[in-house]
Image 1 (cartoon, rainbow, N blue to C red):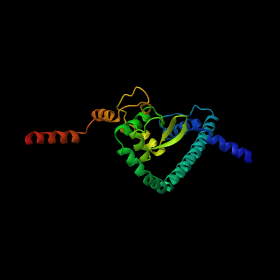
Image 2: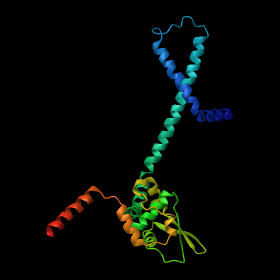
Image 3: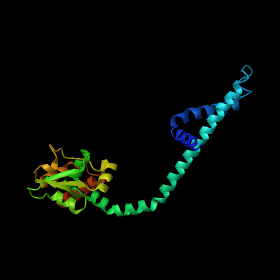
Image 4: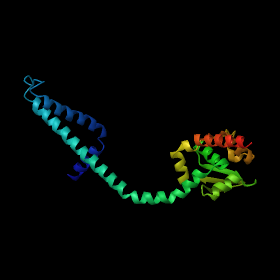
Length: 224
């Protein structure tokens, strides 16, 4: 008996497609019941047709009821877990906020490296150990946004912090790659000051910033 009940419960749990059929028949039965003696004539049906239809409709109604109860139970459980997890998520958010603030405050070459990694959908960075440590690398490591993952002969590998990487993937519009690097930028030996100027020229300015530049420019002309 218990095996039969377990098999029945397993079948019910796996009958997501069947619920569409039973729900359709259940609603159709309700519609026919509401329209009986007004729009339809059952006088020509065989004696067995109406009892069979009632049995089929009852089975469909039972299946719909069971699936509804299961859906409500699952939804209630998920809701309870969500509500119970609110304090933990709030604590986690408060813990991650300083790191996210440092991520958003990052600019220049350091930010461009993060944006390029996001564009490539790969949080793996590496630099050669036989060259001077770049300023952007020092900046990212000091802010806790980058940490060494491994090293081999002449190369050190880094990973973007998981919290920062998840935030970047969630809000990609905030991390748009501006410079068109011909290769992985962290493998190229380039002038950071010149690259920073290029990034500054490519970054779009807000209306407030353009208005302020226009206003200060007019003031300088008047002073001259």
